[in-house]
Image 1 (cartoon, rainbow, N blue to C red):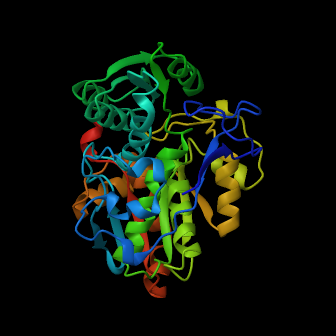
Image 2 (cartoon, rainbow, N blue to C red):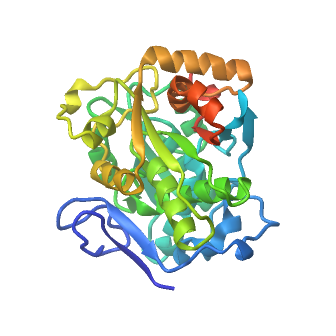
Length: 367
């Protein structure tokens, strides 16, 4: 089946399999293939995201790298029409494992022929741990470049999974540059840039649709930083709709902390200075200049989605309430529920089916 990678912004085809951005304009790459989604072709005996292998890019399904990611619980909470999607119930305790499984499957498809011995990645923690785990499983070395503010819990997790961790001061963009300039024999697989990472996140949408018996939920609240989970959910539901597996798109609401909210400003056409942002209690949401910002704005506009911002106080309140309901998540995972709390009376009275994506486990943060 046909599989193409090209620049999302200018449409220029990618030159080489190891390219991580467009050579013409510097934009992020996007992936397109001809595989359609078929309910009948789901491998129901396979209890991971690879039950949907037929709908994914051909290059990643030939020899998938898998630690059993996916098939996470969907749990009713608060009222009968409010649901929590427990994406932290994963091998490395975050949603990133879906993307890492697809990305490392892609890398393994050509690593031997290109004499690639390892991968490099920049991360505030969760993606670094995830890439480290899947690289180790695939037999590849791994270097993770992280800010000096990385949580000690995530630091220990990355090192325990066999990666070499390098902590750097400076902006996230400077850390990205360092990771992209790693040693010979290493390739940069930055999850914020690589379209195969997003390909793996699409399975979250497939899974939600299956759990709702192919009736889309009415609204989904998604925490957003670099935007991989947001775009994965959008592209996944669009793929389901185009394939005829569902009849309508859900309303997708991106949620950001007020202290780090570039998407909120950009979607509303308001000017902002990235230096105005700071890392708040949601310390996994740290990207002030996401490379896919214009892509997020365009795709949210196409599907008529929306974006909310929540304060640190609202995040901490939501975090405590989630814990009292039995969901032990890191504060960054609580931003979606913080946004839903504002609208909870309306949601309950309307009987809309609402889903909150809980992205990372509470064990990842010392607070």
